[in-house]
Image (cartoon, rainbow, N blue to C red; front, top):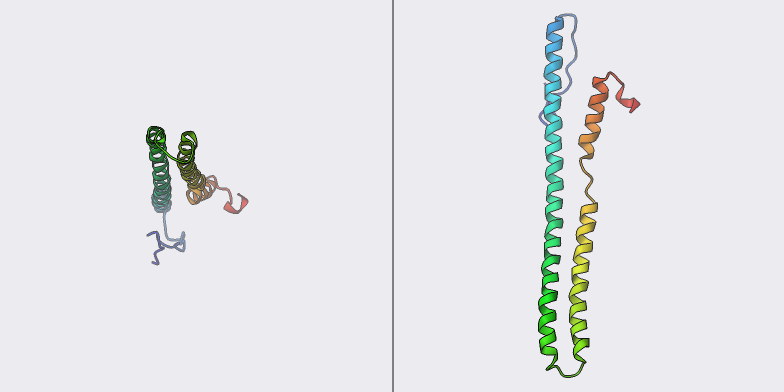
Length: 144
């Protein structure tokens, strides 16, 4: 019997002439059980993919938070050293350094938000579950 990529088996040609009702019900129950296992496997794969995306986005948010902390540290150092600075006014030197790190933190936050917005949930699992439920309700899947 040919196997599919997911480990399931290909469809069998029904031969209802030689089987009892109990055998048919047993086979249908086994097929339904196998279908549910495959649906769960698909859901696990899609959740793992989304978890990786969330982890990557979380790292960007953490880096942005560290950069925000650096803004506070550098602002304090700049304020102290600005009294000794030559050239620019102390407030202007403070403003330039602070603005640079604020822009970097803003860019990292923007990138992290964009990555989170690209998450799609579990589209294949939702589609196959809808089809499965239609079949169980004895609807034709093409009607969906």
